[in-house]
Image 1 (tube, rainbow, N blue to C red):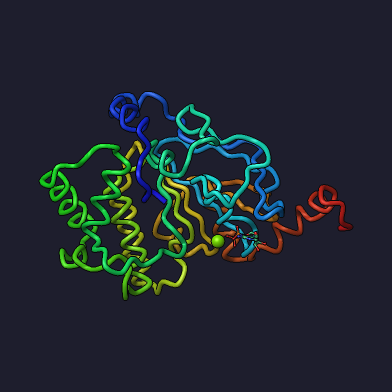
Image 2 (tube, rainbow, N blue to C red):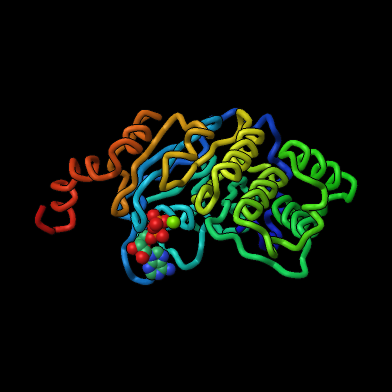
Length: 283
Ligand code: ADP
Ligand code: MG
């Protein structure tokens, strides 16, 4: 989503985004009472959570609980209508901003299903993305240095950048391409939607090592995942369980371990009467 041309305003604004300013306030993302509808159907029913710089939050939940809806709403996907609540990023209400403007503010979304772009090489794509997010041209040399340094950090072969975006990529390569993009764009908040889905254990480990290599004190991470296994490699300090469009439980890493042992059912059962009360159904 960080892939659209920037608006004129973005150019001027980005100049003020110095490292110093970035570090003064630790609060990155504040979501309050967020309700979201897709094609007239209410999917999120009041989500609250806060992400500070340096924190890793895992959002877990069964299929259909609204995880991707949350990710897309955060990025400003036009199909997801915000029907209530607020999203504040670095103190700014971002609900009226377009996805490219949100990317310029420093939000990055790694897709669950990355699209291929035949005919466009990774190099060109990444350079355009960097340009769009910065709002100014990026000198070739600076871009090359950034690309090579990031690929080295992610232990990627240089050949990878010459291939067409996601064209013929394996599941693992697609996810690594997303992580490379994240490294190039250097966001403040990275949202990863099921970055682990469809990966075997080696690919999973490689992708997780990539994310860990990019972790800095300024970065906040929201890891969306159905399964606990990714969390063996990227350690969250906070775990939230999303169910029927609500965070029904929040805790530390132990919550994810409990899920691995017992599945979602015990937690859901605990909240079933309350949820039934809200939706008007019988428990
Ligand atoms: P998750 O990512 O947790 O599996 P989603 O956010 O994808 O959940 O979906 C939550 C619910 O919203 C599901 O019931 C799904 O069918 C519905 N939904 C998601 N996207 C759309 C859409 N584009 N049109 C209609 N319904 C949708
Ligand atoms: Mg999903």
